[in-house]
Image (cartoon, rainbow, N blue to C red; front, side):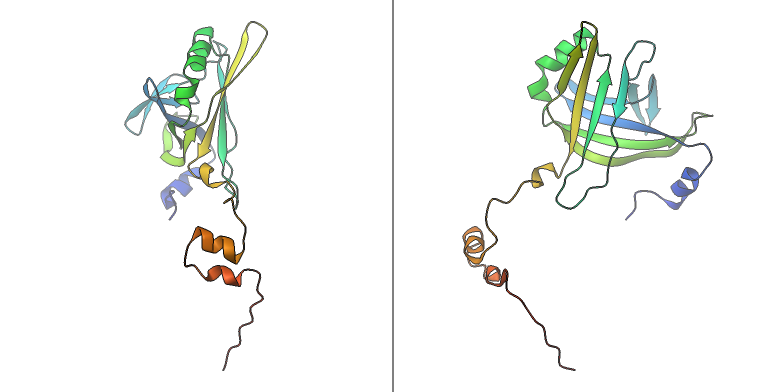
Amino acid sequence: MSIFTEDDFDRLSGPHVARLWFAEIDLPSGLKRAHNGVGRITVGEREWLGVTDPLGGQLVSVTAVEDPRFGQAPSVVITLGGVSAQSWKEIKQTAREIEGRRCDLYWAAFDPETGEIDVNLKKLFPGKVSAPELTRAGIGLRNASFTIESIWQSQNYPFGGRWNASDQERRYPGDKGGQFIGVEVTEIFNT
């Protein structure tokens, strides 16, 4: 089932379409809603705070959200550039509390000429925040990066065993399916 309707596809095929990212983050201080633009806006009956302020020196970047591949869990990195000293200190103090908290990324499309939302919020990336990464250069340049890991991230680990009959029996007592691991099977159909 697609999260986009036929009407959404018609709007997205227009000549002037821009995108906005929205993050709903469950922080220790409470639920925060932010978008990668400037100012406060109301979308989906919720108010979202812009985290980009080009005049104040704070910019945000969001890495590409890639389709997940087999054996690989997707993640998105959100980087805030030009973080104030006060925000830097707050992030550093609450880093352990931030890790593992829920963060859902939403996407919307708007018409840059009118500022109207063309395609309303679509929840594209439910996830969790990993430990924030703080970097600085000199006395005035501070960046904070947050990796939003997919809800499937914890499934990306090896199972910790061998693919043979005895290990399968150890993991799942009574399971005889492991006896066919590595055995060439030939099916014969009678017609």
